[in-house]
Structures are given as C-alpha cells and as structure tokens.
Figure 1 (cartoon, rainbow, N blue to C red):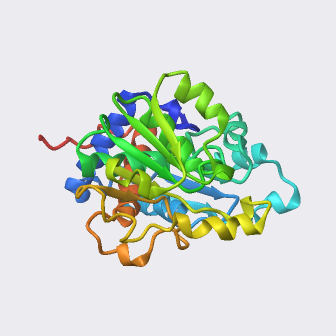
Figure 2 (figure 1 turned 120 degrees about the vertical axis):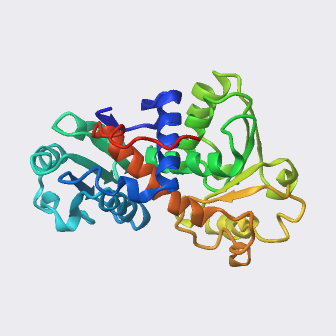
Length: 312
C-alpha cells in the first residue's frame, strides 16, 4: 500500500485487516513499541489541526519512530510560493512516510505524483478524511462488534462535512446498512453522493430535519457542527442552530446501546451533560485514532507482520 487518498482506495478486506491489527495493538501496545525504529514520519499540515496531527505523531512515536514536519503553512516554504509538489518531493527525501493535510480538495492527489515515499491524506478541504474514517470504523467495530446491519444517523453539516462523506462511502460497502440524514435543508447530503453512491447502489436511506423524529431507530448517531459560515442568511442559522444540539432530552427515547460519535472539535452540538453518559464515545474515538494510525503506518511501511499477532 503506497498511498491513502480516499477511503475507497482501501478494499473491505484491507479495512478489516487494519482494524484487526489496531485491535491487536490495543491488546498489548508494548509489543509494537519498536516496530518503526529508525523510520521517520513527516507531518505536513498546511492548515491547523490538533487531533489529527498529534494523533499521527503519537502513533509514530508509539511505534518507536521519529517525526518531523510543520503544523501550519506559514512555517513552510509555501509562504515563499513553493508548490505542493516541490514541497512533497523535498520532504520525501528526508522521510519514510508522509501524512499531509491541505485546505484545497485534491491537493494530496497532486502531491502523490512527486512523493518518493508512501503518502497519507490527513484531510483535504471538504473532500476526504480517510484516517478519520478508519478511526470511526474501529470505534464502531469495538462498540458494536460489527460493521454491518446497523442504522446510523448523520446529523448536522452533511453538505460540507468531509468526515461524513468518507465514512458514508466506507460503510456503504458493508451489507444491510441503513442511513438517516438529519440536517437543515441548506446542509443536506450533496446530490452527487445521492446519485453516484446511495441511489446507484440502491441503499436504504432517508432525509429528515429533526433528531427526535428518528432517535429511537438509531444504533449510532454521528454528530457534526452546523457551521454558521455556511449560511447566506444569519436569521436562518439562528433559527436552526439549537435544533442540532444533542442533549439528554433529545436522546431520552434512544436505544440503551446507542453510541454517540463526533469527529471533533466540538463547539456546542453535543451538550457537555452527555460527556459522562455511557453512550458517549467521541473521546474513545480520539484514543482509537492513535491505534488505527499506528496500524496504517505499519502497513504502509510493510511492517505489519513484524510482530506475531495474539491468538483470539
């Protein structure tokens, strides 16, 4: 595996293998602490990030490797006008693997043409976020024990949310999945995803505007922020914003084993009163992100078989 730009770059078998490896790492992290000794990860973040960048860095350090890079385009030669391809070409001379985030959609795909080492898309604009998808899939697998026969509600900004788009594409390949999209009309799931994915594969889905209307059906609710900057009319935002704040009242009729996910950062779309609820799994997602990125780095460097796996 030489690159990961889109979650669809991975087959279902490859996703399952990564999740299995991540779960083995969780069982005994110490057995993996030297797998990437003498290897270097470059983190090239052309836009700010907390969780994703630190998660990649923590993952590589946990594998015994080293990290170099930058956390903002202003601290790179991009400020001098250097192209993304030249930056990648240069940095691939110094590293064994690269994780890259960029505000422009498609930038990692362009960068891939000049990279001499494996390249991971750590998020490009509103397009893709494949390692967040792997994080979400690992969390679902650990909490539900499966990645099929589930009803998942996506709530909030479904139009611009790259985490939603990536996860939807990945889950659409597992059998007997049902999708419910909960959003204001202004932020509905893009038409191209409906036509090219949902309708093309005859998947079970519907669109609603209120969480309360569907909460009893859900196995998973995946929250995202309703972004004020996406509205042309501030009055529409003010009218709708509180509709998409998840709190105890909104989930009082939910299944006891519902899991609440969120790619973070959270603003106010999940009330803090839910943080101690056993159904809240968004900080478990953060932890899982480290382990699945450890599995991905190992696999992309061809080191996934360096440690004998635990027997189940």
